[in-house]
Image 1 (tube, rainbow, N blue to C red):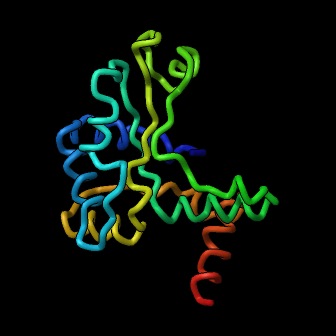
Image 2: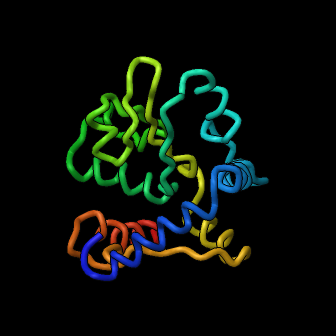
Amino acid sequence: MEGGANDSDSTFTQQVARDWRRRILMNLVHQLTNTSEGYISTTTPSYVEKSTKGSVTGGMILTAHHADDNDETILMKLLRGAHITNLQGMEYMTALATTETAQQVGFSNPLDERHHLYVTKPLLNVRKSQLVDYMEQRKFDWRIDESNESNKYKRNRVRNELMPLLADL
């Protein structure tokens, strides 16, 4: 994020993270990924807990990347001329390999062969519209990064211009 407004965005984000805690967040992820529309995935809390049980003593960072972000990623790769074998979306869970990498994202505990730090994207099967509906129905507060509105960056042009055009076809 850029500019002065981002200081308040950062403070807001830190406060929300403190307020929600793990139990509330896992409940949210569970509800959004286990819907009647069939958005059950390997990123549901039970899968994450089973697949990492006994091995994650370091930590996990959850991001809010959603299905629309994933579609943009695939389209961006296609536009860059990626080979067909590289036209996949984002990984649901990625291990940060080194202590140095973990420290760069603000994780201060040392990592070794038994301590891991994962970046997890549990909402990759959920559409942005579903997230917005969910948040509005429950009167949750959230922020939208102002830089997403600017077409200064190629990804934003894809999001703001190309994705709506493709949706209309």
